Image (tube, rainbow over the protein chains, first blue to last red):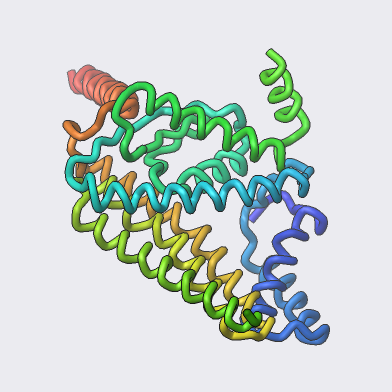
Length: 181
Length: 135
């Protein structure tokens, strides 16, 4: 156990989340209960130590709220699409596995992109190549190269949105340059 | 129209649509041709289905303290569903539980074959040196 200790500030999001879960499970958000929950959260985080999540150091709430709304809209639209495919197309549905190279090499962003894209029905991460940060995505109802290009663009757009929310400054400026080009 | 009726109507719609999503998942499981496309049906529509059912529950309970529980339940669903879908999909691909004729493109296959060839070459090279050592 010779790992780098992380600062309390870096650990804070985890602790806040643990206290929230504690309060939710007790269904009691009184100060005393929250204080006890915070105590347990600190003990748990110290005893069951996990590799630290390397955050980008910024979080843009103004970008996060529209992203969440658009995400929810996409989930609704795509759910009905998969429902339609299941009922109408059924056994004849054609899929594809598409390789999508991502811009970011941060584990957090690759994971977040994979999660968001997996939660939107119709796409599913099959394999991750961490060294080149490439996602291999199984897309349902991808019949030709055009559909595949659309899927690839959607994944890249999702990643761009996540970089704008919580990417590092370097990733953000690289994204701005790409958009300007 | 009083607010009570509106809340009841909204939660009724949420519940019916949420149940419809779960039905869609079941239909998809039966009708889709291979493991991967079944994973889409098995994991995704119920993210929305559960959201709608939990929202209807929250609307009907009329107490604020159920909302944090529902939020935690849904967030854990959001965190775990892609992981399980990925693990099953990945295991399915590696054990060849898929129908290549139903894929319009497979950009992973070339990578896998290259890696397999590399591993085979390395194994062969190792054998070669072993043989040399024997002689």
